[in-house]
Amino acid sequence: MKIGILGTGEVGQHLARGLLGLGHEVMIGSREAGGEKLSAALAKVGGGVRGGTFAEAAAFADMVALCCLGAAVESVLGLTGAENLAGKVLIDATNPLDFSKGMPPRLLDIRDGSGGQLTQRLAPGARVVKAFNTAGSHTYFKPTYAGGPPDMFICGNDDAAKASVSEIIKGFGWGVVDLGGIDASHYLEAMCIVWVLHGARSGGWGHAFKMLH
Ligand SMILES: NC(=O)c1ccc[n+]([C@@H]2O[C@H](COP(=O)([O-])OP(=O)(O)OC[C@H]3O[C@@H](n4cnc5c(N)ncnc54)[C@H](OP(=O)(O)O)[C@@H]3O)[C@@H](O)[C@H]2O)c1
Image (cartoon, protein in one colour):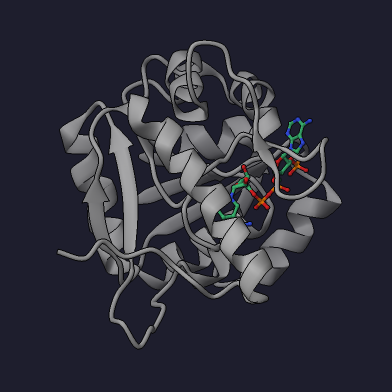
């Protein structure tokens, strides 16, 4: 599959590396096609990854992953263009974090809901699946834990889209827990803060969630 990554940070880089490892074609998008951040990300990822603007990465792709600063979602989706996302699965890995009051971050006050719902509202033609936001990006690909494979929590309104994203998550070595429609994003985004709190208290960032039965 061709996958476009909207974001040059750690999340975009780790997702890109994992997706290349699974045999997908990947293009990373940024505000500037020739910018330093994009060049640095492409050099770190390697493996034949391509680069372009946000719009070019989405236009290239069958599936797109939104991996930008949480507070910049509206700007990034505006630059990407709704026409480049229409009908496509859009993974939303972002967390709408507010660091203005220090650590731990709070969730940004998003009108009528969560970051995932905002993404779905701003890209109404896309099939948004919230995923990859409850784990540290350095643990995304084939993590090994004494307690077995961790779980990635997801939600979204389109079952076929969630099935496609679940295939990728399983390929990354994770179980999948589906929490329902995109309105469950609120809880997935709060889980990110639980993850941060535990990291700050335990002094390590290698932990991950697992649902036990
Ligand atoms: N770090 C983790 O382990 C982790 C795990 C799960 C989820 N998350 C979430 O994943 C997202 C990405 O995190 P990250 O640390 O990889 O990257 P980040 O630094 O939060 O975001 C980098 C991306 O955001 C874009 N950006 C920043 N400010 C912008 C603005 N004003 N207008 C338009 N675009 C802007 C940048 O564009 P340019 O390329 O043009 O600079 C870049 O592509 C965040 O929402 C984060 O909360 C992080």
